[in-house]
Image (cartoon, rainbow, N blue to C red; front, side, top):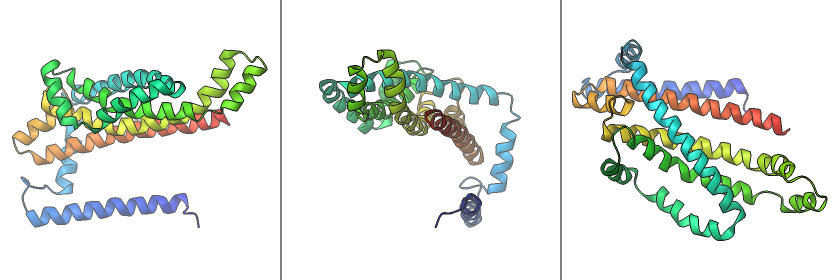
Length: 251
């Protein structure tokens, strides 16, 4: 039996209430804002962040780094994925590299990047390197899913190459690109903020969280975490909205 949209909303609401209840119980158990502040105190701190003078600069810097890293990884991932999808030799060549990048701990890459790059560039580099394998792998899989009989038939009837690309290849790989972008964006934000924590640029959510932790402002650390989650959630919704529009376009 299918669960209605309203039922799903109620179940999601129940999940949120459960997490807040557990949070409240733990905060009462520890009874210390230096260990775990209460949800209501953290909410007040979170709302207070929006009124701080450097809030927009902090959030804007992190978002900009994320978008630049996502844009660079998108271009590199799509181009590499297309080549891997149409050339088996290149696919065999690039696969070990993708596995290595995905398997290497993010902290190791950050520590090396701190030696190679300046603080403002480190999070962008980390984000790009973290997101690239997801997009590349998905695009390569999308290229392999193309109906080659359909391509051969279009070639036999001398269909224009540009039309084959726009009406066969692009519709086939677009869902794979969206799926890869969604996975990459979720992982990428965490990597970028981790990079900011260690590289300490002038502005950034990670840098602000590190400063708050240094002074034991645990409520501020959690508040900035909530802001980071909201940013990730918004971009996830944008990607899913784009996916629905593409599905309608394909139909």
